[in-house]
Amino acid sequence: MDLPFDVELLTPHMGAIITGVDITGPVSEEMATALRQALADYLVIFFRDQVLSHEAHRDFARIFGPLHIGKAAAAWAMKDYPEIVAIHADADSKYVAGEAWHSDMSCDPEPPLGSALYLHTVPPTGGDTAFSNMFAAYDALSDKMKAYLEGLTATHDARRNFGDIAPPGSELPKSSHPVVRTHPVSGRKAIFVNDDFTTKIDNLPREEGDAILAYLYQHVQQPQFQCRFRWKPHSVALWDNRSVQHSAIWDYFPQTRSGFRVQIAGDKPF
Ligand SMILES: [Fe+2]
Image (cartoon, rainbow, N blue to C red; front, side, top):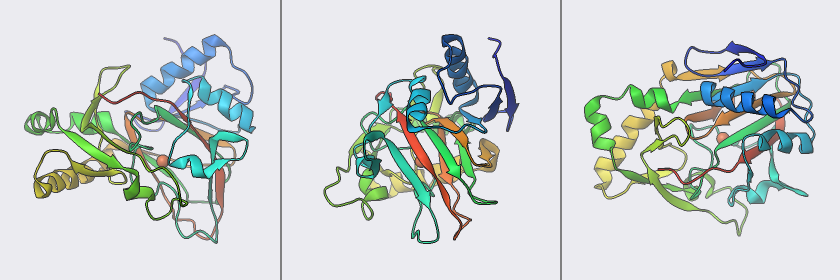
């Protein structure tokens, strides 16, 4: 379809900066359809110069589906806005969210379809987000490895990621998902294990599963599968969590990087 906005590709295989769209207010149904198509085509889409209220942020994310309220992340949600989590790092930060490569909340039984991150304050340089294309990573596996992974499932556990930092009483979900999932829209296959949440491949000897996971982690993190987004104040990134992993690069300490994230509900991986 012809898209009613301009698109600047970050790489040939993923990532696009979209210009000529105002997402700070309601968008037409035609525009919403085009934005959904752009997400399907580019896996992660970016916008500049959008000053988003909490309401506008939620409305933008709802273009792509109902909102997701994560159980583990609930402890960090904004008062009066349970769908919105503050993302913030500054000179007092001891860690930042999402530094290791991951797919958001893959520990949930139904992990979010995608995430919409809005940053209003960014460091003068640094603080990029890197994304890696899990369709491309799967396609690059050997046929023998694809056959080996077929039908395997892996355990994803919030304790691996949040166990030490979650406030007392937080619910820390654990789920089992296919190592290779099928995208519900495109039907393409994507690698769906990540170093932040995945603890083991189910029903394999521990040493064998750990070796396979170590191989897959270094495989999916190769630069040819990636794009990298350089933030400016009031930029927005929306990624398809089913087909990309991402890493928030913390190279800007003690500078401040601050904004808000909303997640869109997804379905059970298959
Ligand atoms: Fe993340």
